[in-house]
Length: 348
Image 1 (tube, helix red, strand yellow):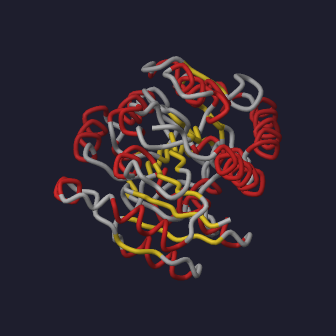
Image 2: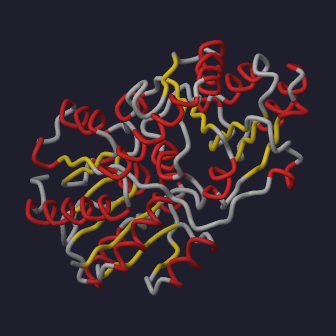
């Protein structure tokens, strides 16, 4: 099979990182691929290192006005593609109507279908997103569910001393963009009632200054480390005691699978993604949305109950090995690709 990938997002977003991981993984399994993406040097270098042809592509207003989406059809034709995979809404919106092969769109969220008018099939990251696509009009046999796997390159455990964190203190870790939907402020309010805990926040975003100011206001700044964008998620998870996902909104949450893979107990809010995969008391603890007191209570309970921590870790490992390994996800992605090709193009 020959697949053309069209990726319009940023270089360091979660979905874009997974796209790169999946493409490299498929190449290792012998799938012929080429990529059209924004010309981010890190992304292009990674594709080049894996022997995957990749070309820079513009997805701006001017590109749309000039009809540059036709380049996608030309690239698919020149590559002899069996399938075009448009990753997320902006990429899908650039795919022209007249394509030489079927097109599949990736739904990492509850995207508006108006951006996916030219796709023939859809791959959703959760069952609920898949169901929402069907409810909004796409034929059930053209909608597939493929969750992501953890995006963790090998990295050694991060030494607590390197981040001025006491060895004996309970260490909490949040892996998230510094954006309102990720609930960083909720985590900081929870930390205020957990005086023994330290918090590492790995991620960057537009609210960093606001959250740093909030940490000072709450009197927890001495126990919080804002780490910025990190590429050593494995090393950070290995160093922490509890992984926390405090999001207000989270359609999936790859960090769930990453915590399970690294044998770290998970506390998550009842956002969409966590509700679909985390079984409260079995492979993680769930707390209400926007509830700092409830989040703190769940963390406090985990710290006080070693047997519960051990049970959640083992439950998480079982869930990971059943559904979230790299091998399982890539096999599901290949199966979805084959089915999309078999179903062919939809009528306009």
